[in-house]
Length: 438
Ligand code: ADP
Ligand code: ASP
Ligand code: MG
Image (cartoon, helix red, strand yellow):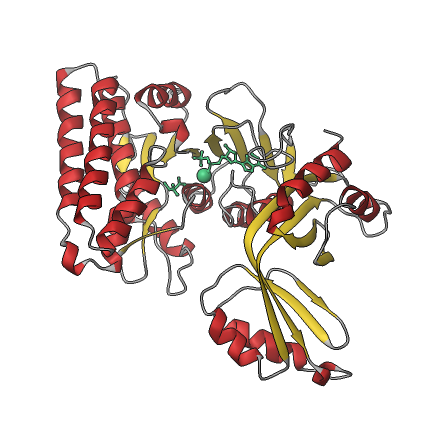
């Protein structure tokens, strides 16, 4: 069974939803994963924040504005009285629910229930639209099979078992619609796979069903060689290996959720990135094939914190790095980059959570300094160890940009540079010119 995921812009209006219905109506068995309509999850985040702040005026204003937006969608989407009525009832049910929370006792699990409404609405609206047009489909509630474990990681075994059981009971059906992003946690409460998580839902479903292909339909024709929001001339990369795509997604290429490549790589399922607005464009194929030894693309990840530890105890000592790493492990904080000298180690993390506690503990090993507002520039390709010239090209392109840290050789697919975020745009543009001649 093939999995097709459509992102927020692809289902962002009644018109766009109609386009999606054409793209999926070819009779081939498939699971269609939908995001919330564009802007919805951001708005739900704002609503939850206003609930936390006990700001009832903002809560009401935001809910009312979003409600009106959906009334317009319903009016544009359905042509029959029955369809319109179903749509209106659906919207009323979800907006009554949003209004039902007690502002004085708002809690964390309620925030997650609010964030889930976007995908619940978009999938139901789309399912009714297909029904109205005589397209037989089944609405599969993601909350019945999508689950995370005690570490908040997707529980693939659970997902596989439950999803397969549900589908096995629907033998006559071959078109399934389900929600991206939302899931239940290990205790069964509503949760999600982090922002942009619908991509992850799609590859998890693909892996659970051993799909022949997962398609991620979005508003751009594939993974570009650089960030199109910052750099003017970028171009799609036709082929990427799983490793290359994973590096780009993790280090900031927003077109893919940071960890969504993992389930596809696990089951060797090709992932195709396609453009809803330009369906004939070839896009990008991500697979286990290596696509040649060159520099493929550049991405940037902001919000990086650099931590430097200087300690003479490191001199000629073993076990020092282990003690440092253990602190990060205890606080479940991943390290992205690392660079060492005889008496100092610099490393980077991407979260402020537990930073104070981490600094206090590693402060016992030496003198610690911290720099905020850093950016990792990640250059991705297939860098053969015995081939010369990659580094010189990169540093030649970056000659005007101050570089704080360098990581090369950790993986054959990634060269990372740490810079101050104020130099990010300049760096991405310089690399576009120097590496891709664009
Ligand atoms: P969706 O709502 O379909 O999930 P996203 O907004 O999450 O779409 O991702 C698509 C956007 O990612 C594009 O519109 C583009 O601006 C941005 N983007 C950032 N880096 C890249 C890149 N390297 N290649 C393609 N798109 C990128
Ligand atoms: N709707 C969610 C978000 O905006 C998930 C997604 O779009 O992938 O983050
Ligand atoms: Mg996305």
